[in-house]
Image (cartoon, rainbow, N blue to C red; front, side):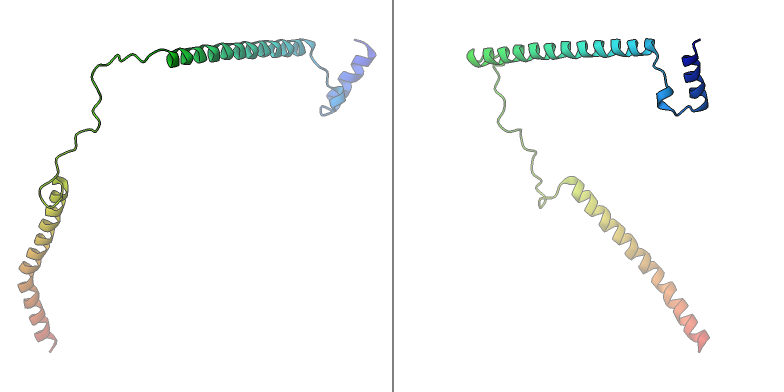
Length: 133
């Protein structure tokens, strides 16, 4: 080891943040350059492949435009899909009628419970009036 290399190594050990003392690893530099070159070549190949694909697509579109349209499917498509049958009951669907029925049944339950408990309320209210007087 020469004196100059020893000084650099010593200063690097003493001051690890000193950028002037950092040495580049030649193997690592060579590997980085090789990777960069391969990446550049791959990009160029991709550009060439995209250009070829664009030419092929353009040629196919030109062929489609110049040739007569071939009707492969002889059955015509229907203009409009068939409409579902309309409800005869004031424009409500079955689901809407079921929902309305459920609401009516719920209100009837509340009304019947209130009617059944009304005599008890009257008894308790009479009893509480007589007790407090």
